[in-house]
Every structure is written in structure tokens, then in C-alpha cells.
Image 1 (cartoon, rainbow, N blue to C red):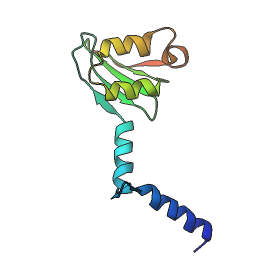
Image 2: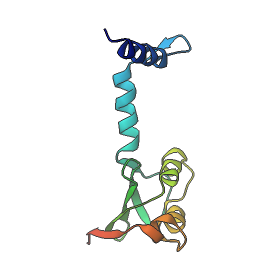
Image 3: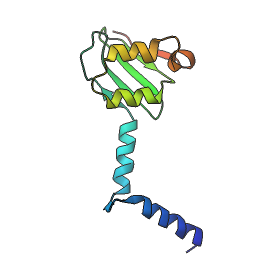
Length: 119
């Protein structure tokens, strides 16, 4: 076996064994992809939105508003998306105003919004 390949395999093995526990690399990859792809967030009550589908990998948010319209926002801050997914006490309406609609937000400056569905 090539010495460089052997060295890489040793590093991968060292990375998988952590604190005496062996993790299944496939399971970790699967969980990583599920966390960053299309996570439905619907915690808390909001008069503005029913739910937000957060996609950290693509930096997009699909917002399902209570009036029946659905908008897709691009160039959303990945840090804000992760914060939305992790913190259960974030108001969806407040998050939409602060992250998607506020003039100085990354999404408002560099992103787009497209109407996906209108009731």
C-alpha cells in the first residue's frame, strides 16, 4: 500500500475513534447531511409564519406564511439558519424580520426572494 494512503487512512481512523468510542462514519455523515438539508422549524407561536424550512448547505430558507403564500429566500446567513434550528425559543416572525427582511441583512443585500406558491 502506498505510504501516503496508509498515513491518510491512519488519520481517518484516529479521527473516528474519539474518547474511547468508535463512531460509525456513515451514521455521522448521514446525520450531518440531515441536519444541514431541509430542516423544518415550527417551534413557538407566530402570527406571521407557520413554518420555515431551513437549508444550511444551500443557505436558503423557505417560509410558509400564515396567509398561504410560500417564499424562497436565498443567500441567508448560515449562522442565522443554524441558530434558528438549534434554539427553540426564537420567534419565527422576529427571525424573518431580523434575518430575511432587515435592510442590512445578508439576505436583503445579496440574496433573492421568489414566490413559490400563492393561495
